[in-house]
Image (cartoon, rainbow, N blue to C red; front, side, top):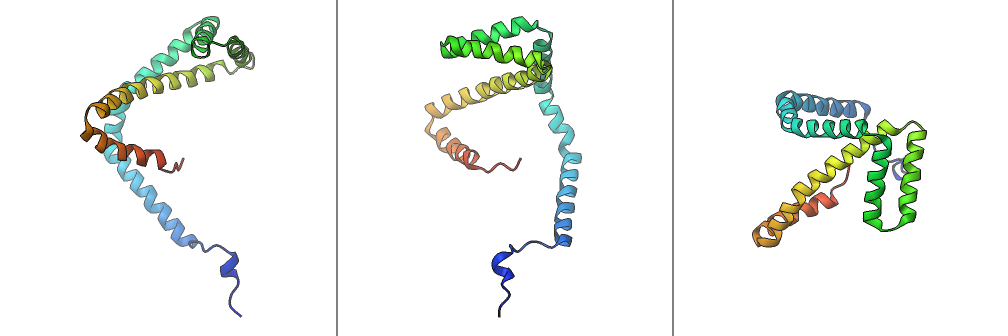
Length: 152
């Protein structure tokens, strides 16, 4: 009788091979970060400075002013007073439960990422609308990015 474990147990890599693969990936990452790490950090340093500035701005602003601004933005986006009340209650609960600083850090990240997306996306969209060659070049890249699996 044939070995039935082949049908029920998924074939997997041996522990030694897996250990070797992990070591190769780790060494490759270490070499890459040693070679290009400083250049990458220098490239993104202005973005980090911008993010830290907004984080300090949000954390340094009075809590009530932050809630008023966010509630105002919620009203402009929704034109619905129930949503505004929900936003106010949510932010009051965030402060009451001691999560204000974490929330302001998260809001700073979201704000900076939104500005960065607009700064990249609007000119790219205008470029694609005006030039067929740009659209033909950029669209496949965007298609791949949209369907690329996330490993994080």
